[in-house]
Image (tube, rainbow, N blue to C red; front, side, top):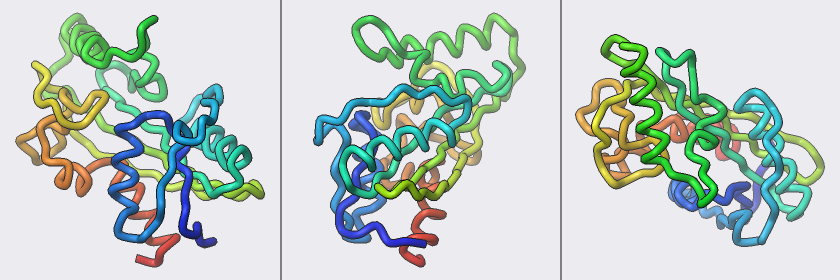
Length: 202
């Protein structure tokens, strides 16, 4: 596996996601800069898979910046909703005034109630990381964490759908959990362990 050097571009405008990725990379002495920091446009995500959309974002950022770029396409899949919102996770939160995740979480719960979905309402977070270089090469790393949907929303930590996701074997949602504990358990951490093993040999 090729090395990524001292600086890595995170192909995201999501501050929470950039913060998490920066914390995961900190032990390796990699300086992280985000697409937002460089004023890069967000490309249209036109694929129908996490891997496809991760590739779009990583390659666009690597080409525009001349730096190795890491993208993350992730989302929550709720079994009783046929795997929705899945790759549309962020779309469910879109409003004319920006993303409203409490609204999106309420939508998930309302649909589950309307469907009389049995407990436990199983779900998982999925993450696909794409590491791309300016010359067009890339590598993919996939992770997931299993759990269930709970209500009401719990906790003000994390971001996105974290307050309604209770990981298997845990008593706190991702919204309540200490960030260090979440970094051990999360779908992003699972994918990162695979990236670290491939890139840093650890």
